[in-house]
Structures are given as C-alpha cells and as structure tokens.
Image 1 (tube, rainbow, N blue to C red):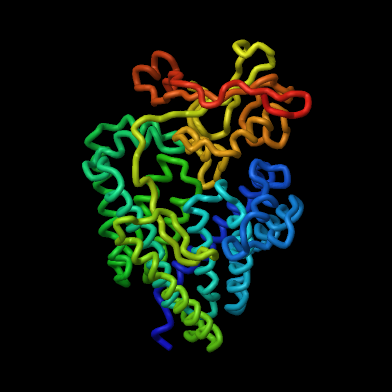
Image 2: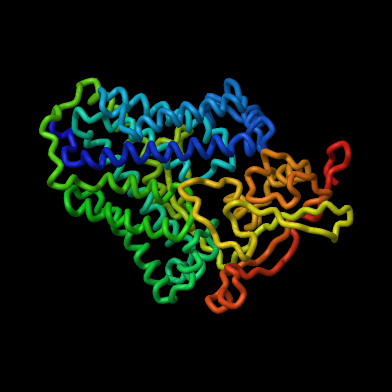
Length: 471
C-alpha cells in the first residue's frame, strides 16, 4: 500500500514521537508541582466544586469518578513514566499497538487534568499538546514507514496553528497591520525572559522587519507545508527558525518548542537515512485504525477550517470536549503599556505601615531583578497574574490572598520569596504599577532592569478575623 507510507519522513517521526512525549513529561511535572495548590482539595479553584457544577459531556475526566490530591499525584507519576519511555524510544521498538497505547494513555491522563483545570489550564498550548498527543498515537513503530495520512494531519495542525495566529493578528490589531506591534510586545508580553529587554531596545526598523517576517511565516509559508520534498522541508524549517526567535525572546511555556517539534513533520529525510531492513508494509489492522482515525479527524476539521476564514474568528478554541481538532492563535491585540499587580503584606496592624512585597518566580516584581528563563516549564500562577493586571479580577485571586494571610506553606512555595519567613501577615493588599524596561543609560546609571511607578490599588488592605472571615 504505497499510498499509506510516508517513506521519506522517518526522522520526522522520531522527532515527533520523542519531542511530543518530552513536552508531556514537562506538563506532568508542572502539574505535579502546582496543581494541588491551584486546584486540589484545598486549592484556589477546587476540582470537586467544579465537577459538581459541570457535566461529563462538557468536560470528560477520570476525576469525575473521584478526586483526591493523592490520585492526582498518581496520575502525574504514571503519565511521567510512560512519557519517559516514549522519549527513550522504547515502545517504538515494538509492534505499532505499543506506541499507540502509550500515547493514548498520556493523552487520556492529561485530558483528565486539562478538563478540570479551569482557568489555570485554559491556555492554547494545553489544547495543542492534547491534539498533538492524540495524533502521535497513530505514527506507528519503527518496523514500518510512518503513515502518510497522519503526517498530512500533522501538516494540517501546523497550518491551523500558524495561519490561525497570522489571521487573528491581521484581524485584531492595527499595530500588526502597520508593522508597529513589536515596538511594544517584547516589553508587554506576559512573562519576559533574560533577552526580552535587549530585544525591546533594538532599533525600530528591526521591529518592523520582525513583524513583516512574522506575517510571511504565518500567512504564506504554511501553505507550502503540504508540498512534499524540498519545498515542504524549507517551509518546516522556516517555522522552526521563527519559533526559535520566540524561544530566545520570551517565556511562552511549551508553545514555541512544541510548534518547532510539530513543524519538523514537514522535513523530509536527508539522503543518508535509508533503512532498507524495515518492513515496507504495515499490519492490516493498523491501516484500518489509522484510516478510521484520519477520517474522523478530517470530519472534525470542518469547524476549525471554517473558523480560519470567519470574520468572527475564535482564538484557542476547542470544538469538542476531547480537544481533537482545534482553533489556535495568539496576541490578536497587543498592549502598549505594562501593568503589574504587586502583592504586599504587613505584620503591622496599622494599614499604612511596614508593607513588604511578595516576589513571584517569573513575573516582573523587583525592578533590579533580571527576568529569568522558565519556558518550556509553565508557571501558571504567574501567567494568570498578567491577565489579572489587564482587568480580569477573578475569584481565585481573593482566595490566594486569604492563603497568604494564613501563611499557607504550600501556596508560599509557588512564590520566589515570602517576606515574612512563614509568619502570618496582619494584612495584605494588591497594587497596580506601570512597568517599562530601563533604557541602556538608565541601566548603567541605576542598575535597574525595570522602571516602575504606582498607578492605583486593585485590592484594598484586607485581614482575617479570628474566625477566618476576611475584613
């Protein structure tokens, strides 16, 4: 069955299977470290409460049968072990049902997490990882060539990811159309990294060139992914290169790294790769399974396809509860100023005395501290603090402040520093500051990475009465 085999994409399959599994490993480790504080039995948005008010059809998850923090930890351990085996390539050495089963296991486990993760798991890269993991299940093992229908579906995934992002930009913000978006974006992006300030301070002509290159890579290049051979290879490598620049200049969790892995699906094998010992055919049962899955995903692609060309294009939307074929996009609008929520506490009863800052791990705080690199690891609390500064005051934040008033050790471990060394503050508050990167001259003169000024109060000082009531 020559139509079924993608003989020139053996290396691409290796990169896809091992790379996607590696991102699953990062996702499970991130969940093990943060989920129980954010969403556990005593979390900011407890899973049991969410499950009671939602239906299985809306959010299928094994945690609907029961949830406990121990069960969550067990799920992350099992998922991590299976992901490690795939990174090492162990299931891929067996029959095709073995990697099929392994990928379906980690997909189902992570689906169970995402579907109860609420706003803390409401990011486009969570859905992207689920779609990629499900699709990777049908790549087969090394005893037969990669299935061509699955490789084409990977190209279709990268097309939606890139073209969708390009279209949402062109529709959403005039700064993308007039090539000025990157005058601001390196500075105002959710979580800058060590090179973001240097990128921001590059000449404005370079920023315009960046935006123009972005439009070419997202609006033109994706169409070339479907041309097998050198053209598709070049298109895939262009996507890899543009995503590598985003990795160098920002902290977008695993979005950019995973996109690079997926784009490699279009890269044909170099001439020196020739595995003549491999069986050129796949088992009939596997052909039937792949054909059935491919046909199902093709049918589910109609709504995402229509969304790409809709005037009311949705960004990072799932059209089915299993997250099988989705819509993607990012930064349809660009903020021109950076607001930061700074959380402070005091041990003094008088509300105007002794205020000290809580430092978060990734988001800007201390103006003298250089931003750090965390991606592909995902700091979920820090990311949501960026959305909070945009005006999205959500219920979880008040619970977070209560946990600080309680000096909850688990919550404090999510932070970089606790200014009170485990003692309970009498009051906490949240203030808004306007941040901008220090210029080269300001950096030399003051040693600052950021220049900031207060602009208002988000949450007035609150404390706890003896009965635990917020006052």
